[in-house]
Image (cartoon, rainbow, N blue to C red; front, side, top):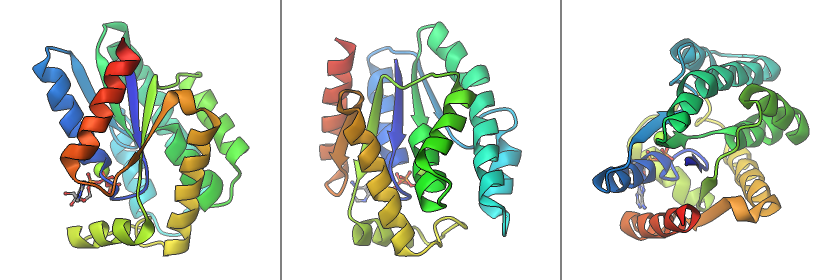
Amino acid sequence: MFIAFEGGDGVGKSTQLALLAEQLRARGDDVVVTREPGDSRIGPQVRALVLDGDDLDPRAEALLFAADRADHVASVVRPALRRGAVVLVDRYVDSSVAYQGVGRGLGVDEVATISEFATAGLQPDLTVLLDIDEPTRRARVERQGHADRIEREPGELHEQVRRAFLARAAAAPERYLVVDAGRAEDVVAAEIAAAVDKVRS
Ligand SMILES: Nc1ncnc2c1ncn2[C@@H]1O[C@H](COP(=O)(O)OP(=O)(O)OP(=O)(O)O)[C@@H](O)[C@H]1O
Ligand SMILES: [Mg+2]
């Protein structure tokens, strides 16, 4: 089973992914936790280029994310799925569509096409979209005390990104769980666990 966690910066993706991994491991599942960009063989260099590079052309940024994704899917995700593991990925295609396609104006269809090429069509069985209003999201990021290049973007970008994620979910509701991530961690986690059980059965 392949599960993606999506949503804006600071919505709680990593927190919820870790909680689900812990729960599945306690039941004896082989769980692989991985993230984009970064966990492919070329990922660390790509991540450094994208997150720290100033004035990177948006098309170059989108293609770097896609290159990382292609390597990540081929070298990490598919081998794990083949051996029967549950793969939990922190960001996937929807993040590219939201940030590059909408946020940077490259076009939803264009970025989705690049991602489709990169993944050779591999889709998650379930995408957990953590949704939260912009002031709450920003407060969480600021509490963490650091913001990388993308997180320093103005609130308007984040609102556009949020709407783009929600539109992706609305277009294929059977493959998504949209969670109100403004609630307590354990409440959110319980809702995610129930949805995962449903997909499995
Ligand atoms: N349900 C919650 N209620 C309150 N605070 C939360 C909740 N979930 C996570 N947080 C806090 O919000 C911050 C961001 O959480 P987390 O790192 O899991 O988000 P993220 O989506 O992975 O962010 P990023 O996109 O930056 O990786 C952390 O300080 C975390 O402890
Ligand atoms: Mg995170």
